[in-house]
Image (cartoon, rainbow, N blue to C red; front, top):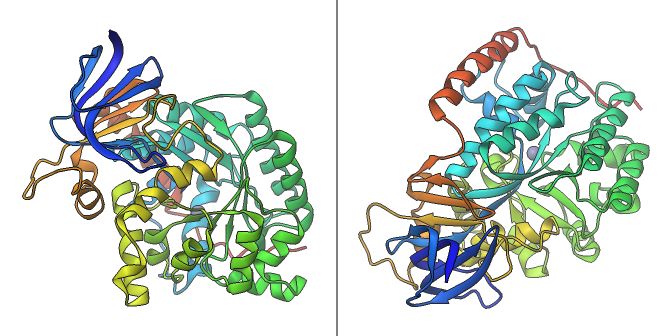
Length: 448
Ligand SMILES: [Zn+2]
């Protein structure tokens, strides 16, 4: 039978319930996987991708990113080096946020999407912050994401750190975009962090989460600022306050959860809240190590994000694999499959996405073919996990299929002319950097 697409001759890391790994073929009809065949197959396809004995994995899912973070790479900000996480926000992220306009949001979305696609990411969850570019900005981000050919859940990160009204405008932008509807690019509700939003805004955001049936995300306990803020003003630790405002639950994804105690871990588990772990960003900002081994032991759903720092998903997978071993001085606390689950099925569960995260009949045809150029040891069913976690990165990703469409072939995006994109980025980001040169430190605190 002639199918629309066949991926043949691969070692298929299915991430199905049995976590099966076998040599075989993935059969695609339009945007869905219709069969996964062990061994040889007689199926032919209009498009045939030969994996040549390489590894075939489900499209990877990044559960927490800031696409606009890509514009910070080598940025001309003139700042004294931050000495802690709070100064990191005040001296780097907030001046950057306030300089952003809608065109900056578009070009960052396009380039960051392409960079993620290059490492096998087919879906991500993004939050954008830019107090001078609130209304309508999600349309600009949507345009960049769609041009790259990737899928995303995008949102505006509502905050009241400058003034109370801006928080409600941020929430409105999310609601507007969600109501516009969309499949490949859709919206969610997003707040910055508990130390920059009032109880009233959290309550309204949660009402919208439940009314619209969409995910809700917020940064939590990254540095110590939100813990101190919540203890001082409310007499509650961060997760106690969020629980009391009904902000936790199966539809909530909390980023970081680094500075949490045992009581807070129990709250996360009891409410069925999802965690987005960002190991490379946590190391960069020197905020500490999230208690991920405990979370896993307790049955908390932990997924993997990049927090707008390094967009290569395999580098984030590797960081999650290594960080906890060093932190605990125990190499047993994290396994290959643990971190691969974070980047696939766990991330899908976090956002309630039932059709992605594994290679199984009926799922969306989001498939990645990885062809390591150098193979010093046999690449087999039993060595595939070790290859993926210990050595693979973007340069080994050969083909990416999103909803049955080949969007990356031989490591190059098929959706855009890269030369043109880079030229456009040079012009647009050059303009942003000019404005960024004069941006100063922002010492802003929630006034209410
Ligand atoms: Zn973040």
